[in-house]
Amino acid sequence: MTENKVNLAFKEQKGRCLITNQNVSQGDILLVSKPYAIVPSITKKNDICANCICISKHQTHPREMIVCRKSCHHVFYCSNKCEQQHWEKFHQYECSFLDKVCALQDNDYVINYALLVMRMLTQRLHDILNTSPTVSSEDVWTMLSHFDEFTKEKKNEFETVAKILTEYILVKLIPHLIKDSHEFIGSIQSFLPDHTDAKKVEINNSDQWLSQMIHLCLLFNDDTTIKVVKYLLNKVYIVICMEEVNSFFHRTFVYDGYSQPPHVYALGVYPFATFINHSCSPNVERFSAEEDGTKFHMGDIVFFATHLMKQGEELGLSYLKGQYDLYIKDQVNADEIINSQVNRKQRIKNEYFFDCECTRCLNESKGELDKSFMNFVKEFKCTNLKCQGWFIPSFEKQMYCEACKISR
Ligand SMILES: C[S@@+](CC[C@H](N)C(=O)[O-])C[C@H]1O[C@@H](n2cnc3c(N)ncnc32)[C@H](O)[C@@H]1O
Image (cartoon, rainbow, N blue to C red; front, side, top):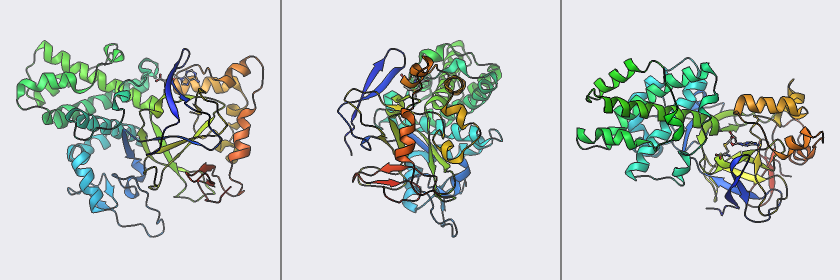
């Protein structure tokens, strides 16, 4: 376990944020964050262990992956031990429901987030039962949702997913919390913590779905029951929005090698790290732990300082996907993101629903071009010209390329 060099704070314009609790040097590891929930990306499920998230590195001779004891073929494992652990913790609840989730839409993106939210809900069961509590799980249920700002199309999609995942809670999870039918309503009520946003959600065409659920769970068809199940549906809808606003992708160079862009291989929710705000001139970068080290484990995200930082300075991470990769790939929209504050701001507004108040945007809105952002590229881009990777730190202080592994 490594000591975090950050504390939680609050900024008027941006809400909660993380700040350094000491002076830090460039390359210092600030925070190692463990997932509250993590799932392999659906497109890579055949060679990522669903339990330990290790990646098969034998592309030419794929390793034999182990299927679950019910042979559902939705999850694969690197060892019997992983199958056993995962069965006990998650898969015994999820296995028979995965067909339903994976048939949701012909869209990997939707299936990925549905699986991640499902995992958050299963972990919630453990939190309630106190069988396998995770660190700072309370933070998870206070994450921002921006629920009202998604497009109509997205809202419809979330409603469909929310109905399926609420059914998952009712049918697969709640029964583990109750001893007799009288406790059903209380358990539904308290399964997810209250959330002010959930009181404002209006879900369309839920009447038929509600009757089905009440019938399926053998509940009384009275006003109280309808209200309680409906509120659970609203809370699940909010959890989906939270996941969309707060989850992190893991990317790896393992599949196509270092001369190609990295692939997404897993996604997860990271409670404390989620409080790192966006900056267009970031002082923090991150890498995914692909192997177990002495201070971190597979699935962890390691955040490090790209600049010297004073005690009390706010951490800023770029939310714009592949922002730096654009330098290497020279994609058409590189200029749009890097040079134009107006376009960049618009993109953040469209994708993340906020008006960026970072220092670079504030400076550039006054006409002062802020080029400090470029330093990262000069200092952290891998010096191997064929490589698309970036230098990352190790705990031994030596920087090495995440992709081709040369040292700096
Ligand atoms: C992942 S959360 C970060 C933690 C958040 N501040 C909180 O209180 O939970 C992302 C949200 O924080 C706010 N935020 C992050 N970066 C910001 C920035 N540069 N300017 C303004 N708001 C920001 C936005 O509301 C955004 O949707």
